Length: 114
Image (cartoon, rainbow, N blue to C red; front, side, top):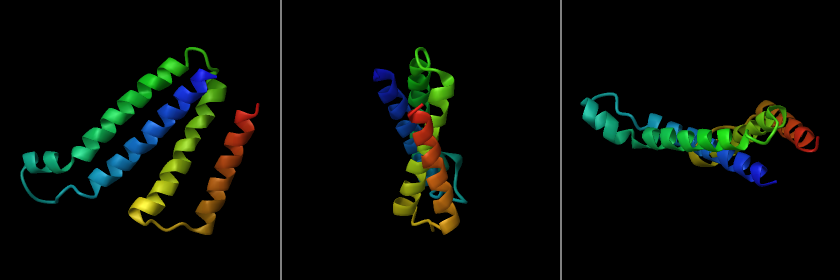
């Protein structure tokens, strides 16, 4: 049971890493020196760090959890990023996207109950 929490933490850190990538990407200036670009892109480096920790947790969890069970749970990251994109970046949510999200969530529930 402990491993499910490790998987969920791994997925959460991966999703936050993606949000950090987006946050950094939209702030990279088109002009300026490489040093200025690197300083302003600190969220990208934070995202890489979060991805690294997420990967280590994922590997740790895979020691005891079946891959066919664990891997579909990564889809929770899509849901987290979807929600964060709406609230943080004010991205539009179409009915088609929302329908896809519902299908992903349904799949996660089915796998989690298997």
